[in-house]
Length: 207
Image 1 (cartoon, rainbow, N blue to C red):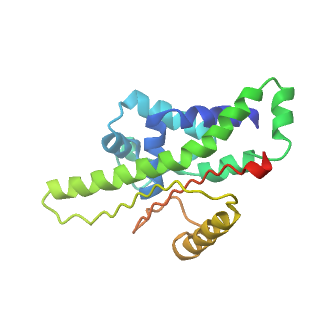
Image 2: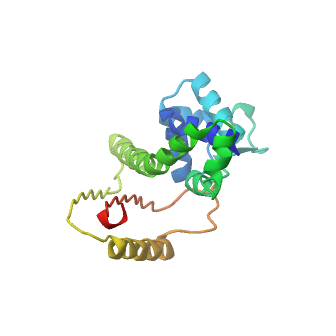
Image 3: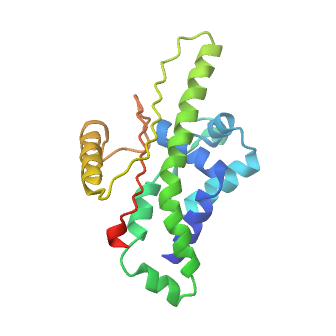
């Protein structure tokens, strides 16, 4: 468990890994050649990142036997959702287990990952959608419109429970309308919608 946490924590700190992951989230299984073209990574960097994420259990690959050129026969795709993976590994009793193995600092890093990863993936996927739209425009094609909404609020509220309930209600609605719980990660999302939210509240009565 701790070894997997270390590998995933390392992946989250590597921008080029998250670029690959974000592309595969949007467009499903893809060849290394296409990933290199879309992310601008060198061949060595690409295959190093693919190997790292495969060893962590995040990616898998399969061969397309119908492709004549073997250089393009391997297709990589997401095998495990990183967000869900982090939630699964953040179990009760993990702090004591990590400390008993001399890895207490790893848990602090893992906690930061819970905050950083969703917003980072939101940025990466949005940037990919914008770049794809610009690329289509450069080709003379009619690019799809990209809608982007960014909101920041700082307010006075002694008890944030009602806010949490409202946000959870919205997330449940979003999941029921837009999210497939049994998504086939080999296939692309036809009409991607990217959502990332973060809430922090200091309740003096609980300090």
